Length: 495
Image 1 (tube, rainbow, N blue to C red):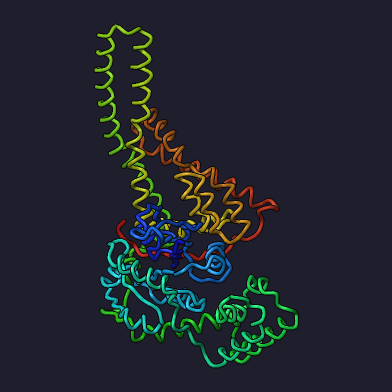
Image 2 (image 1 turned 120 degrees about the vertical axis):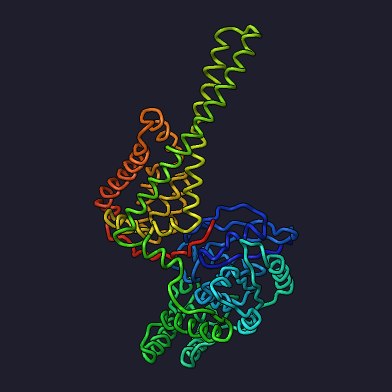
């Protein structure tokens, strides 16, 4: 019987990189939230009886987004033998919010403090021993990108899965909240089944809509629970969901006071300083268009043009050699023409543009991995709202520049159904990797000295997407205001 281990963490905490390091599997590593939409799995290296499941990157186990529902359903239904909770060491407070929810689920859990190398460079020192004692579970320092701490993490994970080692504690809240949670637990205990007592109490208190549907609560019990919640809300002058969030952060702050030490003066980070320019309201868009023009100029006009010359020379030499060989063999003239002009000439013409595309995709991948493309989504939000979409629609469309199929799949990260459907319809019209060779072919063949042609063709394609969006948004099927756009901007880092 295989050991099932879930890999869970916030977006951009290095979770997918950790998955690749632990399993040896290659998976797309991007630098924007929502890159992993479906769970992916693979055997752990050195432990073929252990299966690692990569769950979507989420900030919370609340059931409001598709990723959160996928993750929560897996944890409550499939019940993994252990959970590896990846926490970004450079932003530990935010990462531990999800940890507090996992502790309430009473599953064997181990914390992987990832990106410790980046944290140390930023002057952040975390006492893993104290943190482990405070949380009641094992904590291991790792750096997935550097490959450090991976063996220790795997060993400890297999141990807790085999021993079924559950957390020794869970977050404790204020007296009034704890009293209310205890009464809710008693009122719903006969309906909770095998769900963790603490977890379902907290979620009922937060008015979790899916959990309320899941539990066969009678009307009298529901009214009793609702009265308890309202009484607690009135005494604290706050709504129940906000109360739980505040209680969690109060608990986290108490833990971190004696656990995390920061050196140096507080101030703007390097990423913040760069963002002051790149995400500037006036400069952001012009800089983006200049960068895109520069990418096309390098990939088609300069380096790309040089590689075409090398390719033409290579295939010219091959053509001469093969022609001489065929002539000496006295092959038929039609066969000679077919091989030289058809096969070699045709293949050479197509392959001549491959170096250009390689350079183009290499440069775009660099922008994705360093974190700039996440800023582009933020910048494009203003434009996208003009035709009824939020900046979140930019991410699927950006993925669609490589291929429309994964772009359409990425649209599942959009919570608003109308926005999601409109994005799915528009994404196939985005100039993708299959269209780029056509742009490059026309630009190089008919306008060899005009570097602006290929970017212009690209922008015309984008313009048609915008025009289609404006038209569709005026219909009853896609009408309405776009959903608010909230997105994490990850720190800049070298790919």
